[in-house]
Image 1: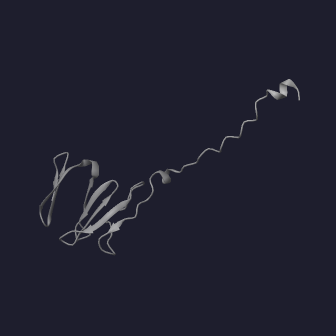
Image 2: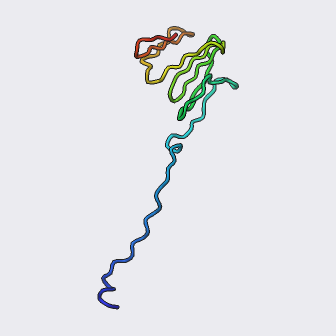
Image 3: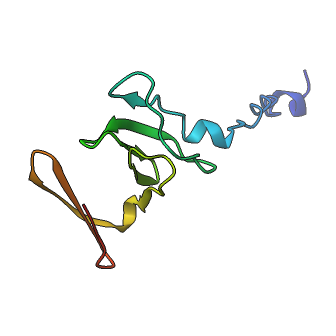
Length: 111
């Protein structure tokens, strides 16, 4: 064995392949919680939005919360519902057993 071969560095191991992470893996889909079977959220989620919770209101409509918004849909489907982005909500107040007051940051109130 020559002097050069004796002091030569051992071969370096090959680096592992780069880790491939899909965008869908960063935010996994959560299973929605329904208060009653057969309830519908009342809106079509946009890209990256997932429905977290769907319940029934006192007047027979639906209330749904997603990762992006709170949606209130009255019992009559032909009338428009109200969608409030979650970051726009300033406070929620429960006035009595059947009344939820949503105070928005821009001054709007939903009852």
